[in-house]
Amino acid sequence: MEKISTQVPEQPGIPAVSAEDIKYMKAALKQAEKAIAIGEVPIGAVIVYEGKIIARGYNRRNTDKTTLAHAEISCIRKACKKLGDWRLEGCTLYCTLEPCQMCAGAIVQSRIDRVVIGTTSPKSGCGGTLLNILQNPDFNHQSEVLYDVLRPECTEILQRFFKDLRRRNKEEKKMRRLAETAQADS
Ligand SMILES: [Zn+2]
Image (cartoon, rainbow, N blue to C red; front, side, top):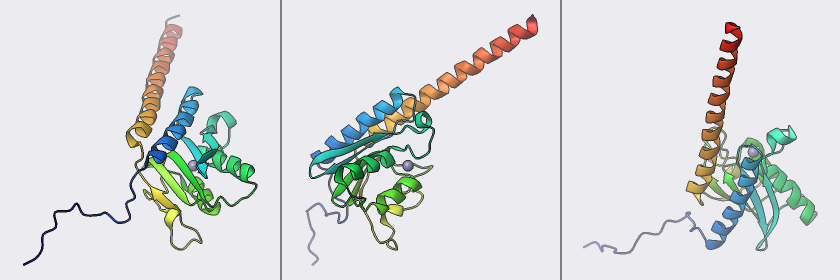
């Protein structure tokens, strides 16, 4: 007779979320709050090396008027400066949103060991959603990826931003219509 196991099956390849991961994702969320405060899409990132945050970054694309101002890119730039090396081996990058093609490319190029992602991006995610640049076996480097760390919080901040944006756009449209009507009446 076949033995029936009463143990919960192990899930190989699915690493457990540690308290450290939660702590650093919270730090990345703090960066996302900085972005929302200046009217940018709230995306934040931090890079951790030997148990310490060595770089922080948040999206500043509109403020700096460059697509290169993504949270992950500015984090990578700061970490490289701090370590004095373009290689970021031994580093973990925490990002509130799944990296885009540009950032995922930079992550692989800088040989970051591990990437911890908050929420996935259906429009630009290159950590597995649209493409998996982070783990393409044909590249010379693959990062270990952990998904869904503080996913509800990372999703909520984006939803909050877009909801507010829609409300503001609607108000603006209403004001414009009122102004046009007033002009037509005069
Ligand atoms: Zn990006």
